[in-house]
Length: 333
Image (cartoon, rainbow, N blue to C red; front, side):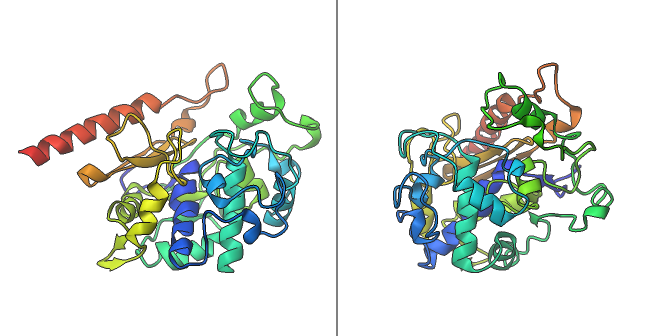
């Protein structure tokens, strides 16, 4: 592996794809994050007309459930959207921060409706392409029949099948309440996942392109994307996004959350970033003009007796503190 190895980013997609896409659209005057979702998706009436705003979705305060197996009910993006918007809220709108994959599925749909392009196409044309990011995007292997051969050695493998997600559906004591018969669907992958998104909803229901998961990239290219935000919207000596837009998205929204971006309390003040279930982590530290990218394939070693993958949260904190301290000491010399 190297800094050019491509990883499945899991929920880092939420910031490096969906949030940054919305930053572009806000900057162009096409989106207002304080507007109701119904402004852009008129048929979205979850929680009552006009009750949920884009800001609620971005800050995980919409009341939408954290996760459900959408693929039990949908096999493409339109079916997935129809199902998600039919679900009742799990909490009251703005009751508190309740992390939600479903909210970012809806935000991905907003990007597509406003831009008139699929999420992956919009990002390729408006963000990744202009920045020269050749290895950042969705579905690194487009041909499903070739998926385990494409990019051999260049894309890190994730899990062997989806044992953790299987237990989320089948084990009622695992912390997730699933409606319906767990045996009603049997599309579980039974091979080592390479070149295809690990997340079941992104893979089965969204065919690899979703607002909550599905992005692939390398450490080098993720640092480039972080630098855009750290610089206040500058990229390649030109302004990609207004500084005011960047500031708006990094404004604390409560409980360690900004708009899309997480604000970890163990990092230097003002830091922003996100984690991903596959073992990924990005962090920008404005005071040090520092981008930290930690990419692991923690799932590839398999699950433990409790069907869980290794916990790398301590590693994320240790790397953050060590790198930040080293950079600060170097700057003071």
